[in-house]
Image (tube, rainbow, N blue to C red; front, top):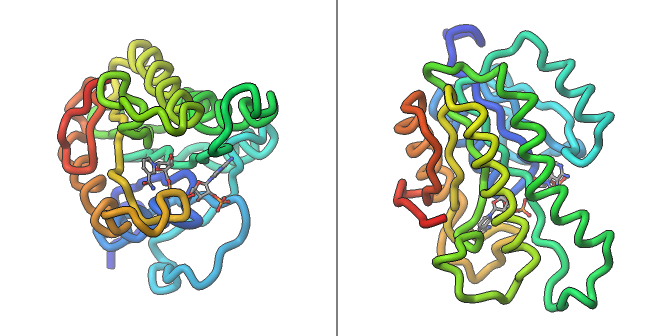
Length: 230
Ligand SMILES: NC(=O)c1ccc[n+]([C@@H]2O[C@H](COP(=O)([O-])OP(=O)(O)OC[C@H]3O[C@@H](n4cnc5c(N)ncnc54)[C@H](OP(=O)(O)O)[C@@H]3O)[C@@H](O)[C@H]2O)c1
């Protein structure tokens, strides 16, 4: 039986539910060792059968102390893929003068600033020749595609993620980086009317990451590998 050293190793940040949990299961099914981070203990997630392939760790990307402790625990690890998935929708149905500065800050720090900060710290742990680093973005970030500004703060936070990750990519041009739109997916965030199930989106994302791994560059793609205009 393959041990941890023989398996490809993926890190999924924000794996307690939704797409992050779906990606964790998809990579486990594909035989990877998965390090999956959660903010609080999870149970009944259907991961028990994979205990030999799974390392569950704790991380709140907005906590500097927890981030430093997590990075210290990861010291010496190498990843074939890193998926920065944690994200929030933020306040809905409010215009900018109605949301608090704290709410704005929370969305921006969670969706844009801290994923890229974490990427900067994780970059030395990614296998440069063969690895891939993914920021889970959204097609709503695309200035060209997204005429629907129903959730401007969320869209702006993902647009900021795209912009900041492009700057990150420019200074880490030895890595393969993708910003991914998972589709509109039935999760707590996507809601019950979303057309895609988690399994289909996660399978597509895993395929895209395996295809792109080690090929270099930085692209904005959807879960089927289709290019999205920035
Ligand atoms: N669903 C869609 O249709 C859709 C479309 C486009 C893009 N996306 C993006 O896809 C990603 C996953 O979305 P989802 O639909 O799976 O959302 P979800 O069901 O709401 O799950 C969000 C995940 O992010 C974690 N998270 C939130 N804040 C965090 C923090 N500060 N530190 C660490 N983890 C944190 C949550 O952990 P807790 O359980 O601890 O809260 C949870 O695991 C997000 O980046 C989202 O913006 C989703």
